Length: 347
Image (tube, rainbow, N blue to C red):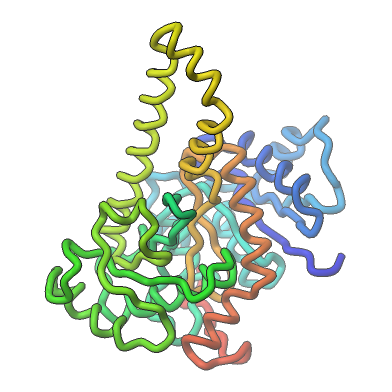
């Protein structure tokens, strides 16, 4: 099959594994014909779970992995010691060129460590950030970094901005994406030491469309396409964003069922409201890619269900078709394919 994207999926990662993971994989296969899925996990268990289900057998494969890295396991030690875990085996498939991408709802720390040790950073990339697509009133924005580098430097944030711009342009089709740095005010002189040091670097970078600072309250209004910050700030923004959306949706649903007149009104606005609530649902946008690696690694929520897994797998297709690692390698480092860096260590 031409132009096929091979996605290795951690079948044992997350709170709802393996059932929701398997269903998400099957849904993705049904939605995209140029896709192959490689389920990574205990072969006997996965074959038993798939028994009786309808799926294209030529596009769904199983690679056996006998171990599972649990959420509480130390990430570095687990990646090095559990060599036959679904996370390690899946990322090794990417390193060996047997898969184009890896998707996991498992341990965030282990996925990040595995990305560094097994898949390897592109030469010249100092840090690899997690980049999450978040809904706004104008569409979506990319929050980068949202969980990988708590203690980042200004040079890291500059690279995050450039990688985020490439992702938004080629994966989401946003031409000349607007880049902003998270700050406590719009004035250039505001912010902590990291923001003050990073601001002039972003301002003078010819590769990005830098528009200045953005305050947290303006993020949902879509004033910027790429929102740059270190991972501590980014993760707080992301979790508050998701929690507020969940609380708001819950309040709306409760209010609509509070009385007979409210229920009648709910029937009238149901089509428009359903569309709006769908746009606020973070699971619609897939997982967070770890940018700057030689291959694609996508981390989804630990609580991910079939829909989020499906969308995470499907986003890998666009990522692969657009060769985002190749574009990052060329635009940020000036290196072509021959300049690929080897993984940082053996796991």
